[in-house]
Image (cartoon, rainbow, N blue to C red; front, side, top):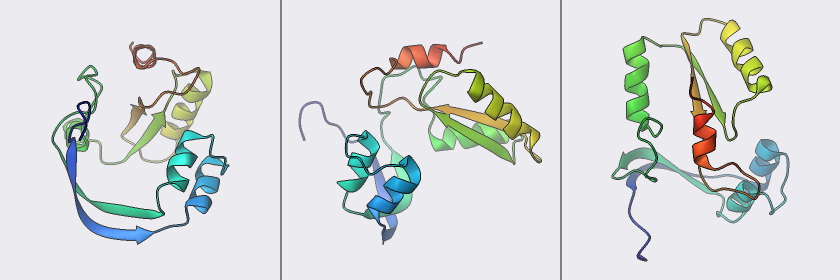
Length: 140
C-alpha cells in the first residue's frame, strides 16, 4: 500500500455474482462510451459484483461530519424521525428548480414520511463544482 492509501473498511462477502457490464452501463448511463468515468469503471471492473456486510474503519474524506453519514447513522436518523417509508434523492450537482420539482412530486405520491437528499461528492470531472460549493447549496 502506498503512502496515501489506507484501509477504509472491510466487506464480509456473502454473495458473488456476475453481470453484463455493457448492459448495465447502457441501462444506467445510456452509453458504453469509456470517456464516461462510471462506464469506464464498469467495463474495466471484470463483471463481478460482491455483496455483504460492510464494516467502516475510517471515513473516506475529511468532509464536514454533518454531511458524511454511514448507513448505520442514516438508519438511526430515520428511526429517530419515525420514517418507515421514505424516498431518497441522490444528486451530484447543486440543486435547481427541476430537482425541487421532482422532490415535491415524489413526496406527493403515496404514503411517504420523508425525503432523504443524498448529495454525492466524489471524483470530480472537468467543470464540476467543488464539494464545498455543492454542500453549501443545500444549506437553508
